[in-house]
Length: 136
Image 1 (spheres, rainbow, N blue to C red):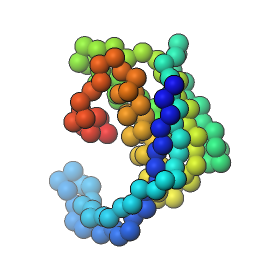
Image 2: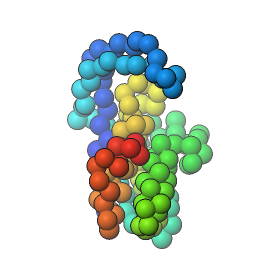
Image 3: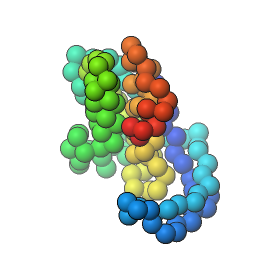
Image 4: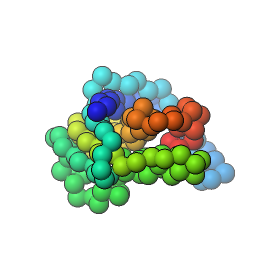
């Protein structure tokens, strides 16, 4: 079993300017990561599962399990491993949701990043950090 903190982030300042060729906005930001955040527990399992608990779980419970960044990160990691000839079996993920959904504290992104880090720890052949960044 692996346990990880997915820390909340606070933007101390944020400047939005111009757009990239892909239509996304350019950003300048100074952020601080908190000691407070969501908790992710994961382990190898017989089949994939995502369980959500915690004070802000009801806000995510209304979405389908495939519609959250935890599942998306798991699937992207697995696809990358398999596309490179590796194996990545089923995993049980438990998200304890403490960061309010939609509050601008980066909860979903932090959860996805923690899942990628955790899967890399569980992997028989870990991916290089550059590959994890590309998946993210």
